[in-house]
Image (cartoon, rainbow, N blue to C red; front, side, top):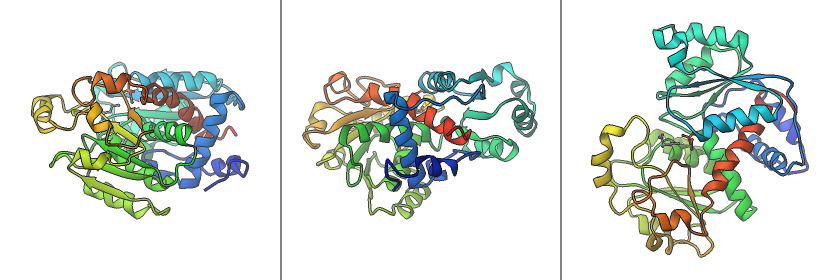
Length: 318
Ligand code: CP
Ligand code: NVA
């Protein structure tokens, strides 16, 4: 892993022009360097001016944090964003993705895309000649994972050997946490009701890249998963696009609400995490959400700092 004083700029020069479609598009050293740069940007020790670069935002799902943090990150880097919501572009009227991606590459310097299918993101990356960033798909939420691991680092210092327990749906957020944990040496436990586990191929991929000896455990018992955890994390039971399954999922996820009894099973200094938006009284109680172990709003803030570092990296501004 890259040391703070050694070679951050040189490691990040490797990601210039690269896509970030999955956490595993970057190496452990590259992610560590991004987190280091994000810390410097957050503290004000480092300022970066990219000189009027333009980020295009193509969001086919709702967003508060991701959209606004990308907009503010570009503003802080001396650039700007263009909102390319498909409802207001010709995409919404059926213009092919391959034409759209090539045209936007002539105007913009980088694209951040939020959509359903990972394949659509891969197609954009294939046709665009500028970097493409995953701003959430059904498969992964890699920018969220960067912010989450920065939050863990701020709480514990050294990430190596920590245990993060995620309870709830084996979804996009769980997938990116597993991959990022594997790269950074954090043990990940995922506790889901039967039938809501993460995609097996993502689990085996994460295990195959766990070079620092960290483990990934899938469980169905939330109480067992909590034992000695340093961080406990949850997300909504029905993600965007799964609204029709809400009632069925509410039944299936009984017992998976992050409440004070469950949190009491974790390590005494454990932190509570949630990517937001949250449904209080479903996946998390108000008491836990608002409790003193909660780092939920630090996670939200850290979206800004990690994405500023990511943009600086892929745009080659270091
Ligand atoms: N956590 C997150 O991605 O939030 P938004 O959906 O508001 O962007
Ligand atoms: N799993 C959630 C995350 C939202 C940030 C979703 O995809 O809707």
